[in-house]
Image (tube, rainbow, N blue to C red; front, side, top):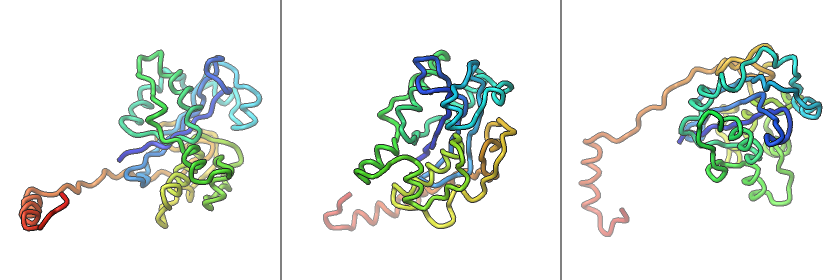
Length: 231
């Protein structure tokens, strides 16, 4: 099962008012384990970033001037998402921005019902408790030391750790936050350079664990000898 943990930063609160995405960060999970593949991109919104938004993520207009516009990256972004199920915290916010951005290019909008919203999961699991990302990181002892400001890839990595905890806990040694570093020098896809980005990890193709024809035949023979089998 392939999942994409995703976060965005924007120029403001509502795409209906002309606000745009300025940063996308994605972390790939396969069977709930990080593969090491990420997608990270800054985007020139071709408009001013609201002062209130800058106070949250620290991304200024000048930094975005030489970054690609969304039309230049929409293909690679959608290719990275592929058939993966998206995992987003407060998914309604990000999905409305993503759908607004991809609509002019003929892509089908993402359905909110097909996205895992970790905000809703946390509220259901811990009713009455704070369910923002910072609070969940503190609950699960996820390292927040690198999060001075919001950042799409950093927040996606934090959320991946939180999501695995919400599912029942991470295995030791699989933390995603151990190799963070700072810097606003890059905007490469899967180049892992940004505000707070991890060192690159090699991508390993999933191994084939399908049963062989001989194993299937042996299993079928074994089943025929069972009394009142359940399958």
